[in-house]
Image 1 (cartoon, rainbow, N blue to C red):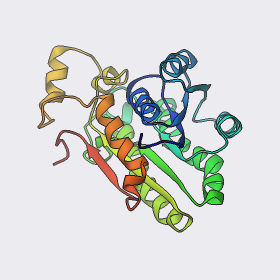
Image 2 (tube, helix red, strand yellow):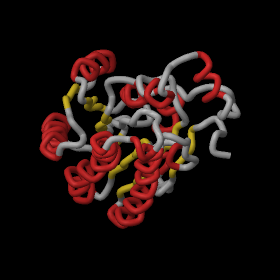
Image 3 (cartoon, rainbow, N blue to C red):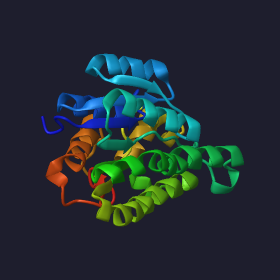
Image 4 (cartoon, helix red, strand yellow):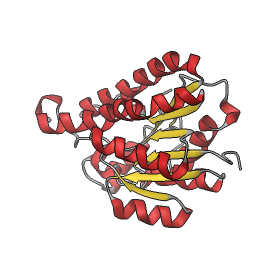
Length: 246
């Protein structure tokens, strides 16, 4: 029960890494708002863990503000924010990725971090405590070819994490990131371009431990960074990658 008495928002909680993180937080005693653009997914996971389902478009300021307002109304406080929602463009030469795809990737992966900070940092500062966890990617540390603008968006998240951490530390707010390697989640096929045994083998060959990451792997790391056990840890971008970035 390492999160007993804590209240958390997890975006992209309707599937994949977000689902795993939200379920683990709830099991450790937290009250959790499961926010996702896919309300059906959010409701399914909320029903499984006793959380609060909330539809949100993390790239839209009004939608993010509504999410935070409801969380405060129903939970009274927000101790933890996990910026997990993310998307990618399909693998392609960098010059062939459409402007619309570029804009969407940066809106969901980067602008969302700004929007949630804008809506929530004031609350955390006023309380003198809080934890923000950004889910980035090994793509932002060791980029893969043909995913150029996705790579760049995740590198942005890592830099934003460090910048946020150093600015918010005097206010008692910690900010960290996780850099997972590809996981067997709904985004995997988008990363690979096609989900075939051959393509999976190609991806797995770059991971020394020989497997994809799982929602449980990310949940374990997120639990540590968002718990009081990590009270002296801020500005860290932790790789959960089976050794891919070595």
